[in-house]
Length: 275
Length: 329
Picture (spheres, rainbow over the protein chains, first blue to last red):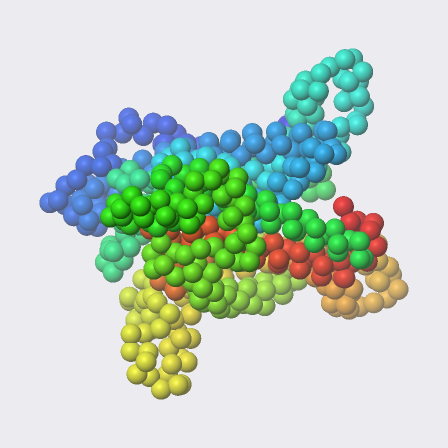
């Protein structure tokens, strides 16, 4: 099944390009410390320098190198995007699996819980948790993870309802496997495809929200460089420093778009009707 | 129908309690002196012990947390969330003062998005798979990935700073009160343009995609084939048979997008200094104005809840399968 999905996936040039792009971004983020560039080095003699040979992406109002800050920002964005999504996938799959497998009361409680979470304006909740507890990478990841698991839970619940009485599940039960084993070894691997699609959109979403929080000044604490906080600093320079607005925004946009394209294409590739 | 509605309302009441429990628990797990929750951090240092004891009694802070919750809930069900720590005014009064400003922005954005998005979705469904349609789909997809604050910065840079034809931020100009009626109207209108564009573009993409997929789903069904078979023209099939049925899922989308709209308001209103509920929330968070934070959180969640109940009721009227209990679960 996976080989076929991947073959269908590769048929889209845009999606293949998106995968390569995300791979390059990830490499940059992983090896960021090896580029001897300091994102926080202040150089007041080189303030607001437009892009040139020494500073390919220019400098900000404190003379900090934007390229160095952007590379560091890639670390922040990808770390938050991936870990926040991991948290929401774990919470969502577990609750969805319990609801779908046990049904009845368990299903009822999880469904009501999802309803409650969906009522809150997402950003209100994340903003409130992050700012009131203490803005940091960890708080942002936890806040995002705690509030965005509902899609994963719904998908896993739906899949479990469909496959829990399938023959392989009945066979496992008949051979005396415990519930936990049936859920994690037999059912979950068969329900994981829509979760991966949802996780890809989730990473895009988490990166977007983190940059929004940092832009609003309530995200990653200063002076840590993130794409959103570079843009936030650029607000006061809007009249003349175009490079401060262009590059970080472009980085957010392309990365978010890449994850969205991957999720979209993967969903289509999983759908047998797409052939 | 009756049984369905009754159950929907009972669930809504239950969800409302869930919302209040979640909000209360969240806010009260923030570390800090509970007295400062109600009178602000600045106030607490300057007060004598006796006054603080009086405040504790007044807000029932010496009671256990579940009892405190019940006292707070008693206020919340009548939309009484106490007073703001900033200006001591009732939170509800502050919310109702700002909410119309947020609504104006969002209604305008929603109307534009639906007005353009749904016909675009129709067009896409009709030309599905063709090169032009696929290019448009990718375009909308990219539009949806654009961070709104970045778009806002460009719009401000181009239309307000460079060209100088639209105001940079605010709801009205400084000299608003000296203007005559016509210029007051145009002044307000000009201040609407940039925030509404910022709110609209992503929604437009959502509506176009959603109405396309709803319509494509309908077109696959048997009754459309039947309509074609009995000789109905392609236009009649699309407009008369398909669109009517595709509009039903759109009702649900309307209910689902409201929390996203309110979320988006925080960003847009903060950037454009639009004096609405989103900016109020941002300011309340920054000032640690807990009564306002709690009040606004519950109020906005309540709006979402009412909208989704409303959408479900509409849905039930539009779709006999729900009404008669077949698809009720």
